Length: 85
Image (tube, rainbow, N blue to C red; front, side, top):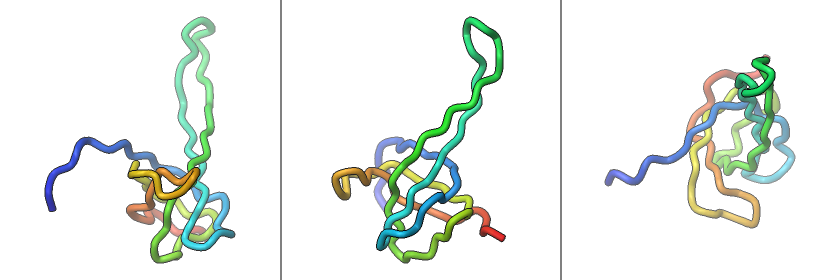
């Protein structure tokens, strides 16, 4: 496989799997606020392509940036790190 540019990777939790071959992944990040010096939490939702349709709600997955696949899909599921209980 040829080397492509560095692609962004995120690790998050699947919050919706109702669509066909598509999941919504919630990614949470922690950071320190510059003024208040307090730890903050921020959540983002990404629409990701799941080719084999094997992700379920609660799974921890790794997603990687890709070309636009639809109006909102710009990410692809690369691997399932942990299955939901």
